[in-house]
Image (cartoon, rainbow, N blue to C red; front, side, top):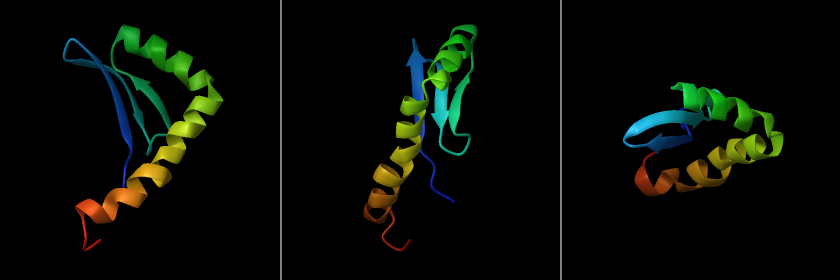
Length: 69
């Protein structure tokens, strides 16, 4: 529960969209980001792949960075 997968999309040092494994979908932070988040959230296979990244990447690598966890 404490591990979170975040995939941020930035342009010109401004974050416009983010996928957060706790939310389970993209969230837009600008007008451009909201439009892209809506488009990306419609692609269920892409969203399912990102949701799986938490288990595939984060949980397998947590012991490398936090050996006492």
